[in-house]
Image (cartoon, rainbow, N blue to C red; front, top):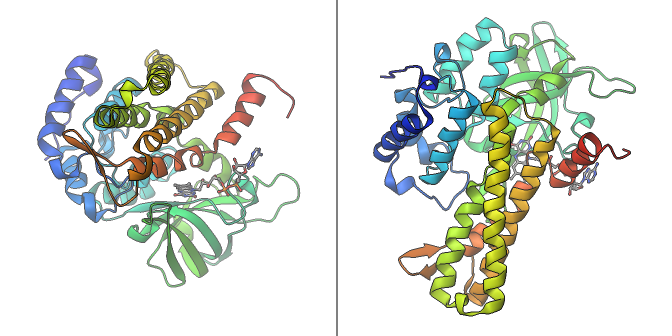
Length: 387
Ligand SMILES: Cc1cc2nc3c(=O)[nH]c(=O)nc-3n(C[C@H](O)[C@H](O)[C@H](O)COP(=O)(O)OP(=O)(O)OC[C@H]3O[C@@H](n4cnc5c(N)ncnc54)[C@H](O)[C@@H]3O)c2cc1C
């Protein structure tokens, strides 16, 4: 049973200790530091349900809806400890995307119906935004929804839909009106059951030959009008606004930090520390990881003081994802021809999955708004350069 209290009233140290102790006991050891970055629901179901039973699955949802009600400061601790202890990522579109969207814009009926089903794991969600020709330029999306009585009829295709093959619901961005000029108008947000006739899901293998995202086709799929979130044609602002303070986590230092520990183990095992050229590059990576930690802390401080993140938080995502790439490239450099995908490398007491991490480091520079788009944001909103 879940026992909730006002976690925000605890000191940061006390909250960190309570959370860490509980995770130590309740996150199965065999799931820690998983090779797979996006495990399927069934692979991490035990951990998901343990969190749900404790009431700790949805850190920022209000307690009235089954969340912990954490403020940004405590939420950062939750995320830091989760990463530090190597807990696996759960399919989290329901918790991180659909929940906040419904809490802010959903009707009371939608909240009462959908939120408990996310907590119980009955509904597993995915995010249907991107289309074959609409990624960075999302407003050009073409999947259409035409109203017929109490239903919308949806036709079109989504792509790169992470974990659609283990989900049963999708948060869909659709075009409900053709508009000249401002394409952001005429877009709506629908909640669609993936088990409806007319839905086809086709997994796409990623670089690591795992199916972690999919193409999803909609052929005359009927979605009840009751599953429209907010107003028809006005979905753009909703769909873009839900992340709020969580944008900071695109830049959280956990991945580069973890990669640096693996690089160190590998360097010890291969004798690379004897090489002065490597040592100099390693020192730079290490200092960059410290700098990333300081930059993260700077934005975290803004949130702790009750402020809002501005456009400059984009710098954190660029710094983080490119540093992660540099460190994993360094691993391949010192591992040489031993760095094959299938084989982990012996590094003293641990095994290092150098090629796996290198391949994993390619994706974060693309999702969540590609790094080029983040640079555009900085150029326009921070440096006031001409568009
Ligand atoms: C691992 C992974 C998981 C994903 N999961 C999901 C998901 O669950 N749901 C979902 O909806 N989408 C998902 N995506 C899709 C992701 O949001 C898009 O890949 C991303 O928005 C980029 O769009 P695109 O792939 O169409 O590339 P494009 O937008 O076609 O961009 C191609 C290249 O051009 C650059 N570029 C584009 N426009 C500009 C510009 N104006 N200025 C400068 N450079 C530009 C881009 O940076 C990129 O390098 C996922 C992607 C990845 C890699």
